[in-house]
Amino acid sequence: MAIEVFNRYEKKFLISEEVYHNIQGTLLENMELDKYNINNELYTISNIYYDTEDNALIRNSLSKPKYKEKLRLRAYGVPSHDDMVFLEIKKKVNGLVNKRRTSLKLDEAYEFVNTKKMPEIKDYMNKQVLNEQYYFLSRYDLSPKVYLAYDRIAYFGKDNHDLRISFDTNIRTRRCDLKLESGDHGDYLLSDGIWLMEVKAEKNIPLWVSKMLSENNIYSRSFSKYGNEYKAYLAKEIRKEKSSCLTFYLPALQQLTYQSQPQF
Image (tube, rainbow, N blue to C red; front, side):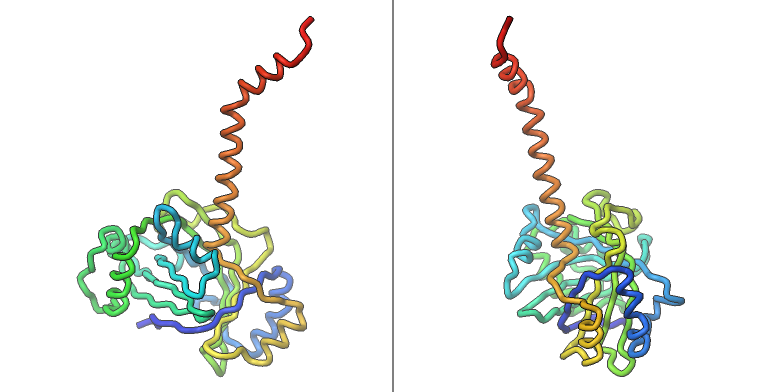
């Protein structure tokens, strides 16, 4: 069974693809590629994020509280209805990230979230995590809000598998057709050639990682994929509202302009 409970600290960095290639040699000296990155090929992770009608979970997250939580459904690639996926609760408390997830078939996951009824327990499910997710679902009236996918290459420490460094590119999102089986199309969240780097560790990061970051002028910053998608969505809605208001008042404005001109 895959690891289903994670407790670790995460640092995030936005870098260029060129910087990634500059540090790749150092990474390979100290780390091993994820088994899914055969021949340095990236693999795709796709997610559905759930939230309330008024987006309470992501709004709370963006306010940077000491405690925040979210629920997402995750797959590797584009799953079919009978494929295994992960339903995951992600919490962050004073900087420590806790993730608890269980395997489910895609249709089982949809049914669980939509009906809030516990599924029949199977060997591949984590009953304790399901109970926690059931409680989470009872507290919020959730619905699918955002599809978010990206291509990833990841490394694990050779001597310390608690150390993980991942790189995500081609982050794409959509707020329609919110089904994992519908494909990984969407609008790009970041400019072309910008990668999101994440350093994840249960304790302090090794000295060689700090040195690598310093030598390549890589500095940490706060970055949430869902959070930045939501901010982009809000900005788009504001632009639409302004455009709608202008269209509504345009005939009146044109009439006022005509009346203010001198008549001959």
